[in-house]
Image (tube, rainbow, N blue to C red):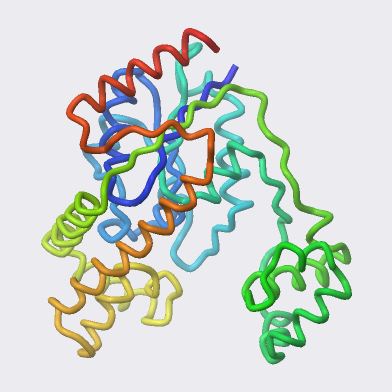
Length: 304
């Protein structure tokens, strides 16, 4: 039977470092739950495991698509479940797999079995929908899928358009195609957290390290290869460096903006994971963190 250990929490709390040590002790593998690490060539800015780290422990679900492709939550869920379904191909009997990352939807897709309509983006339809104002779109959604409007805020244009897209492509309301199908295998949720002062320090140090390790060159190369309008280049860390390369801000300003935006992102992540009562929290700065989590994992293995 599959056993799964989830290592989650806000960015820069040390999830990858802890998971690497645990995987070495367990003789297990790591499944990434990071929505940007799935893309090849986006390495430094996504804090992707280094080549050495990947040699020490096998990592899956990273570098699985090109930057011009779109990896949906449904796509990720399908690939992750294909791996989790046959753990004996990767690890010894009763050895848990580690699911590690900060993308809450990716993790929920696996641990809660969220049903996600696998409907690809329809560019022509989206163009038509985007030409209408949000009030009109929401009124249409109320007519075709009133259940969805009970879950979607009237001002949430992104989710409104997606719900309408699913309806017009499939002919069925998105609310009929959603829900959960929780897995039957045992799951241990380990969360890492730390106080505001510590997380701010960690984010600052990591940002400076990324820049020192060549983030500017990485962004410059990606802009040349894929064009400055590539969607991924408008994500955290890449967007700010692109502004620097465009001469809009200085490198120091880019660094400061990355730090601020990462702090905001970490706050949203913390709120998301804190809402999950299944997560058992551990202090990221606790001196005996590894041993404490290891002991909890041993209890988990023995009792499941």
